[in-house]
Amino acid sequence: MALDRQRIVAEAVALLDAEGLDGVTTRKLAARLGVRSPTLYWHLPNKAALVTALADAILDQEFGDLSPPEPDQPWPEWLSGLAGRLRRALLAHPDGARVISAAQLSATMAAISELAMSTLVARGVSLRRARVIVLTVERFTVGHVLEEQAPRPDAEALKDFDLDDFAGRHPTVVSAVAEYFRPGCTVDDLFRDCLAVVIAGARHPDRS
Image (cartoon, rainbow, N blue to C red; front, side, top):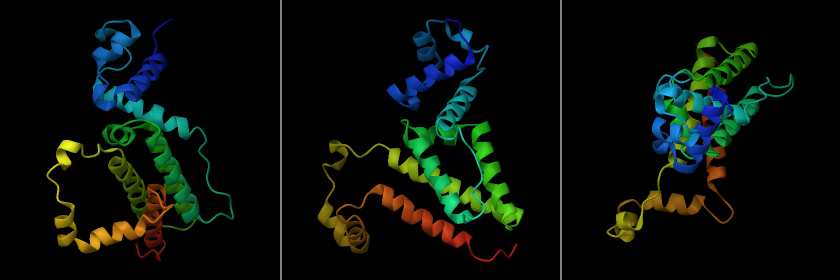
């Protein structure tokens, strides 16, 4: 099979799924493709280009269709849905949020931002405020997923952790966590509730 950029990126996504971002190296990728590392440089000149190609591939799986809201759909509701799709795209792959954070000039991420900002401007939001709103929503979403995908503390790290002492020093934090995560409440609910606060702030009258 001929080696082309599409095949390289598809194999890189498979490598990401198998080993996470730290495992995506040109040496391992070349071995999976049965070629020498310098061969890859004809298509992707460096690791930065590879990571950006990975970001586009991850986002393209979820954002094959990019369309503005229906005329009667409020933009906050539509933007919330867009953020939910972004989170879903990142969670579909190990270290998805790290990949997006490390990407340089992702064409797909730029297309998402363009659509979101132009939609808000078309609804009467100033360009300056539209940019701030969209960047805030995007960065909140990526940051939320970064935390979701971060390694959990292992048994060794927790062996000296005194939960009773922690609860004694941070009673409100512990109570808030216990109260929020009542039966049936998940991290999906937490994302939606936090996002609702972010977008509610964006709905204040535009003063810019």
